[in-house]
Length: 269
Image (cartoon, rainbow, N blue to C red; front, side, top):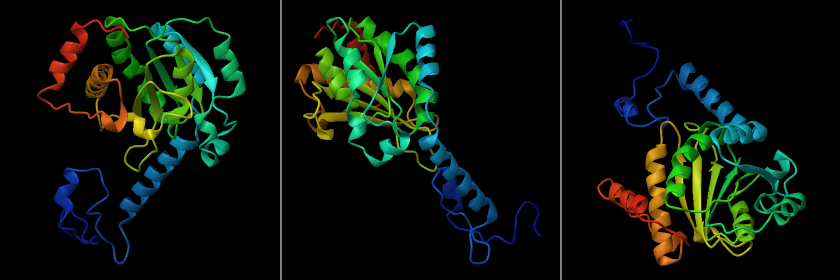
């Protein structure tokens, strides 16, 4: 046997490409099957993806972490009463529960520019790993631009559209939703950001939203995601729209210029 090389595994000429992608390519072959190591790696990745969906997010711990960081928050819930119901009835995850609606209606009316919503979505691990850190980039940028923020809404069993009734309640022109994305075999903790201008419950659709996805350690960085989001906010205020009509035209050459313009201008809706 050649040192450092298992001759029982047939070599795949695509193997050099594995340095460029986490995708499962060039796994090799042992007889008529894939090698044992590749099979075990797949089973581990599949288990991590399932855990991301089914392990509940500790909302109390997240609320405490936000409080320790200086951010006020409130706990809400969708109409889904369990994770099983959340997975089986996506429509329940788009609507607030009656107690949550009551909690909002009891609040004193204040002028709000931006609503930030955090929902567990399909990956509790994504929110646990990334939401707080990203907020530490986002909130200072928004407050520096003189935006008035509502308490951060933490929504259990929430889908993307759960931000619509919250933004509508506060009459907030801008809605930002952080949510755990459907886990993949190479990224069980990917977080997405959905941005909506003039979000309205049962009226706004996915076509009205802009999505910044794939935020995780091996994907989009917090800094780059922030720059994209601030660019979208800037353009949404100018054009009075979001979604398919609002294109993300950020590039490596112009994104910093757009952020400098955002930081140096006082926006007030």
